[in-house]
Length: 243
Image (cartoon, rainbow, N blue to C red):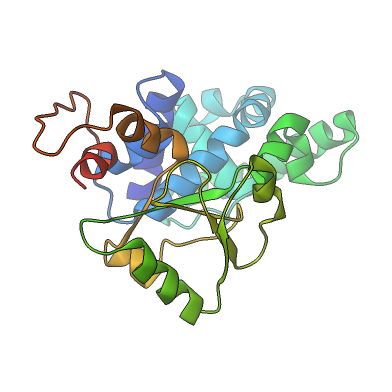
């Protein structure tokens, strides 16, 4: 139950523009950050569809749930992993499952689609497969060459440094590149997952989007400079600045 409560809290903050999902998840101190991040992101993707299902079935009136918790539970029941928690919530959601499934089916018929992912906007579906996975080498603990060598031993295929943005379109499977602009940033295909990888767990790499790496690159402070990061959370830019 703790997962759904924390996911609902995080989703609400994200929809109120109180921070990016990644930042809010890290600030939550939840034990399984990967699980929480995935649930919030997936629920947010289907937010408008979930709202339509909830409204059409009058779920809030029937259950007295708050909207964000209802979205999380309905997502996991219909699209995700079928509500993993036990107790009153699971009993409640199973009681309404048939009506919720019927509402989802009606939406699919109305929009002339057969798969859940086809309910997402076309621009969103394209974005999922286009944005690559960026991984910053933590030079406080290791070096770029050492991380590249380690990945090669795990049968990743290193293709050198990108010479133009079009090079990123060729990334697939276990191929990777050095970024065109940032020398300590590695680029992998969009679906590459490092959450359980040794280099991530050891702190040798940091999962950090390119946009988040640019402040340090642009600031380029001299050695010995005093830099104040007035909005550090969880502090990836700060650690980048300490290289």
